[in-house]
Length: 184
Ligand SMILES: [Ca+2]
Image (cartoon, rainbow, N blue to C red; front, side, top):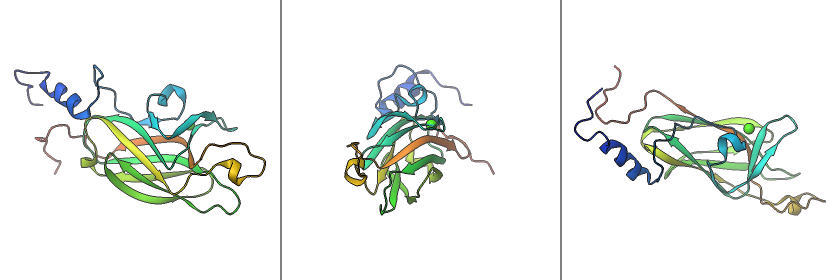
């Protein structure tokens, strides 16, 4: 490891300036959001409904807009696998739901969200990420209100898909410094 030089706090200050966040210390790396108040209250940035619990005991939150975002904290650029367990809102004759996953301004793959709870994954390249706060964005094909689609429902939220959890797995090394040498 290289010595930090005469200004040991310079790199920390730079990291916060780049991330544009005002917190006083580095947040721990976000690896798992369970979509419960304990793990996820501060991370659900926009497009989300409230915390709910399925009969199975799984905690989940509905994305209630065409676009939903979470804020996650990472140590620096690295290839990462984003895994998430979701199920779409549905009604008889509903068109297939789709979702495109973004990391900050980098669009990853788009996929169909099939009926019932399933785990999906999207690979993200290292340069999409930055040290500190990052925005994960889920862009859906549609968001519809149960009251307009299911007879007898009075739920007026526009639902896209329900999220049980999101997991962010670094693939290989996290490289905060450009001087790091790759493994042979
Ligand atoms: Ca959960």
